Length: 454
Image 1 (cartoon, rainbow, N blue to C red):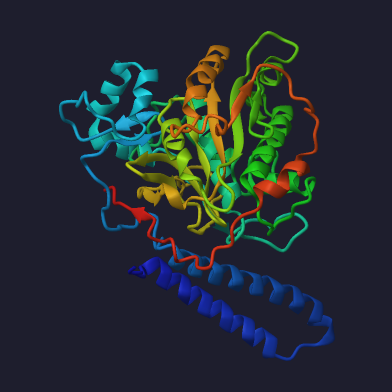
Image 2 (image 1 turned 45 degrees about the vertical axis):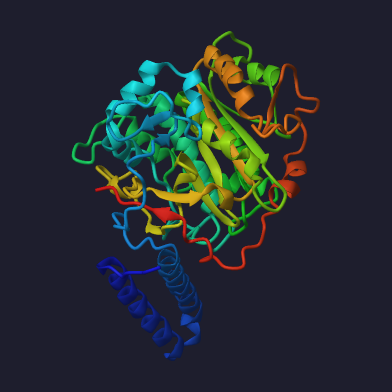
């Protein structure tokens, strides 16, 4: 593995050095008793900034993310198809009717015209599609999280960031459509910026899906800033965040989040949630926390996961390696394509006019062998209409059963009824989904491959 330093890292190192020198000079300089309290506050503030800087630099070196537009050795095949949330991209060539590649059996659930149109775009279409996904990463120097001293989520907030990316994808589809593409050279006045603002890193009702809002909700479930958040808990955080957002923002009135219980989607519960007292269907974000193995991922579910990423209703999977969350959006062969939230960037004031958008989009997809993922994950789906939800049930039920004959162990199930205990405490779910395997070396699995898109 080769780690390179760019000018941004050098600049950060210089800033850290200056702040550290300032910190030591303040510690060693004499002061009167009347100045002690002010000095203590300033010292604590500078110390926190220095710590955040060091964590940020170390973290970015550790995960080989030296710049937003980093260039890494190309490492993907132009011969194999690339799937990205229901879209298939491949080198433009005559189709092979005898193809039996992993996951392509999803073609049985989609029209041939859909597949052909996607393939006609070629790998350039994949590039445009991928960079259009919102990339929400660690940030530093944002307003201190309530009840803590944290002004950065570096080192602990990766699962929340992965969840934000998954939810952002649902919002993009809801307001802009699945075919929307971001054009870096043209600033459009549409929901693109508004969606990013909803995730802005500040405690505000105008940013209902911010880290600050989610951490505040987590406090009610026994979590605090700096704690590890599992995929199941994050799903429940977003359910509550959408309920709160709907009270202040009418644009959330027509969206709802449902979370499966114990790997079961209760259909009648979904109907109640989506229709309420009226007959107007709310668009549905369905989150299904699952555990696909005990200590390690059970590879009998590998074709199930890849095929789910091939259907148009899927908005991705949050999971990753043990204690290292990732947002999975597609696959090629036996490797999952993901967005990594571990690159720590300076906070952006999303409420400033014409705020920069480039740090919210990643140009370099990364891949991880599917057999290295953690067994705990959460799968997301978006259904705009009631018929979409009914179609999802029909499409997904055969997919979630492993092809190796383990019919008694589907990834999750749909039940035509109400849950037995719809008001059960969320905490009952936490122990099993938070049992992450300890990773002996964070660098051990950095063979997660990356390829360059220019």
